[in-house]
Image (cartoon, rainbow over all chains, first blue to last red; front, side, top):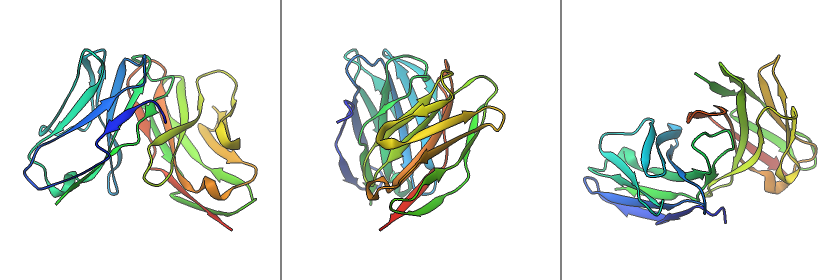
Length: 114
Length: 113
């Protein structure tokens, strides 16, 4: 157990729907990062939050949004889902705003859009 | 901006033989470098990290990597492969204080009995 908890582990939904993925960071970690991993795109950075504020944005679609709550858990919202959104979504956390100390990853949420 | 290139998409070794997974990096500043491992249907686990201390870094499960600035390389090695080492390995580069962590495309390691 890495200490980063992601729920649900698996999600199957239809095109056009909206889903919410949840992440609880490791105790004491203030930074949360979201990644998408697909076969054709590899591991893509989506967005980072630090202590409730957005800090960095990567290749995140406008249909996707995220937030980090006062208790530091984070949610990634995916809307108007398309078949191509099927992927593994990882959350990672770190203790500092910078990344020189590495991330701790959760086990991921596998999203299947049908 | 930093980037990382994993030179082999797939490496196959026999159990008990050495493992070498190659990684070259590009960075404008003093980089931090990491190796992560991902077993099937699992999250990514940190194997080891280099953050400007000793150039030979020892990680978990017998893996180690050597930072070579002159060659801009950070290759991952293990003296003797075990079946449980079969996984995807990612080389990662970042600057020490920014938020930009760049992952390589990954190297799939297969271990034959």
